[in-house]
Length: 195
Image (cartoon, rainbow, N blue to C red):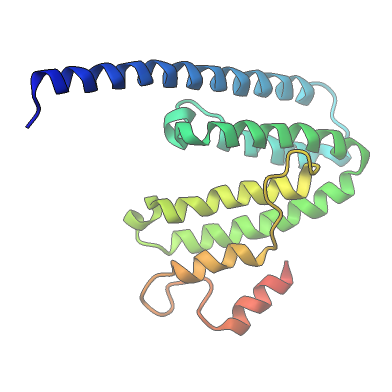
């Protein structure tokens, strides 16, 4: 049971921290939206056909990162990561103009992981799809993009593709046949080798 003095003290502490948190969130959102604006400026205009697929992939990635309600949808704790992913997109744009074929090869690897993840997640019960450990894989794919497309100054983690399949095996549905990747290590190893 709360005393009036204890409640008032807690109320003031939370209110003070809340104001700081709101200001911090607003600053991060401003940086994110400024970065999105700068990227969108670079995406406008004539497009070299050799870069079209890469630019399309970038637009799709941005739509998944920044959308109406993204602060709530992604969570305010992901704002720093979101900015880093957008900065990686800026680096990717620089490299795309120099070597669109390398970009395409990297993009195919990411697409392969995304497709496998989508197949796997579609087989999960709908309620399970919203669990934090399942959603975390989506952010791992963003980290993969950073490691493929950005230079080391914005890279947080560099890890092998096999990292993606560990959570899928650990989190796989309980009924046999419900998972894209069965517990058979050969099947998992073969899938990793394809990538």
